[in-house]
Length: 374
Image 1 (tube, rainbow, N blue to C red):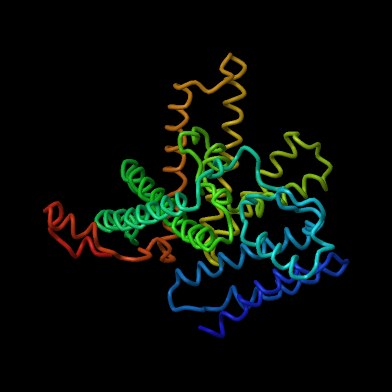
Image 2 (cartoon, rainbow, N blue to C red; image 1 turned 120 degrees about the vertical axis):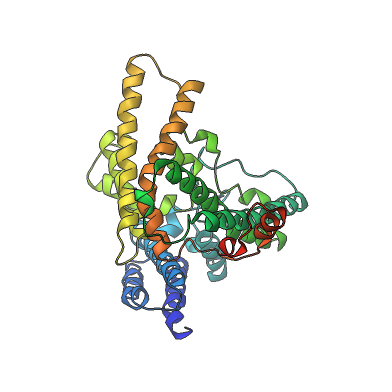
């Protein structure tokens, strides 16, 4: 396993090197070196666990996209700046550029940078370091226990296990139940490493609490599919998947803000989302993400028609029907994606505390402890 991880470590070194080196006409060659590692990573098996291999390929694809943005599309040292940074970092000493590159590499959402999406991310914490660490510690325990509870319930109802009848063929009420557990699990599992990193970073005085806004937005804002993906869901991949679409729209000479430009960026972003989440022999995640801009396009038509008849701002009734629509949409389209994740072991329990199982067993809610164990 150690030898099979060498290409992955080399990839990160090459990416950071490309961000540290001063701008020059040959910097794009670093991109070719990184792409050259693709066969070694996509067809390697660093672990006997399929889910581990799937995660490794996911991370590599993400790094490929980041490298394409930071090496090919963007002159990072001259175009990207931290808040309060006056001059480009390109003329700074080596160690200053290295520190700058590390900070950019680990700032997926662009928090504290010139490219941070304005008005999209949740508010930055304005609290003391001690208060922040206590709050994050609470949420870490909460999400760990939530994952344990969801997997206990999921094991009892066979939501996260392979079945003779796939999720997409199950009754609608069961698919809504599966969507609920899948959504809770996804939010919790994505939040845990984010919170751990924030505790280490802020606790080690490497960053300030204001640099760690919540990973997810308000779910009350998810009354359209566009709002869900653009506001509520985590924005860690926003720049990675949006930069190529913006570049393509400019190359096609579409006017900024025009429908052609917006929809070009939208479809390119979700194509990249799909490629990022799919496996070499499984295209179901790609189909799931390709369906999202189609739903958003239909929403745009409905909203335009509603505006024509006088419904301009979202009322309470509008939001209620919007939430129902979003739930129905994801219950319809997420099933094949879930089946794909299940087949690759991606929905197996990341750990098994067993607390929920013990509580249910001692309370007599479930008597068969073997069913509860995952």
